[in-house]
Image (tube, rainbow, N blue to C red; front, side):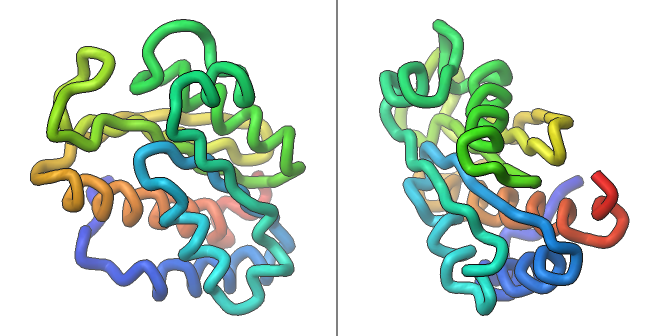
Length: 164
């Protein structure tokens, strides 16, 4: 589902807070190219101390492989983000985790063109992953990635997902 990139991170984080608080869900984040932007958005939301378990910024591939158990191979790939999300869910004891890893540009990474971003969400042990290709310069890619990650968390903190 395509999300508008002009959505306000603060508003999305507040909606996540309301849903997580209402349903008693805990949230964590694993970020690579966004470098902590999503974690910062969540931490700034009112009531975050009740549901935000924390985040990991794993920018370097050795951190992804060593700390998060990402399998050998490319880190801008489905197996990498799945492993990142699942390991963080275990580390933080979180109900819902979103993970992002991508090629922000201007150069390709892992044979992926700039703007290629892999996402994964682990929700009560069920993990889904998908890829997006965002246009623009690195700041545009980071903004679009941040918004997509927040939209994903919002979708997973609505009542339709509350039962896991």
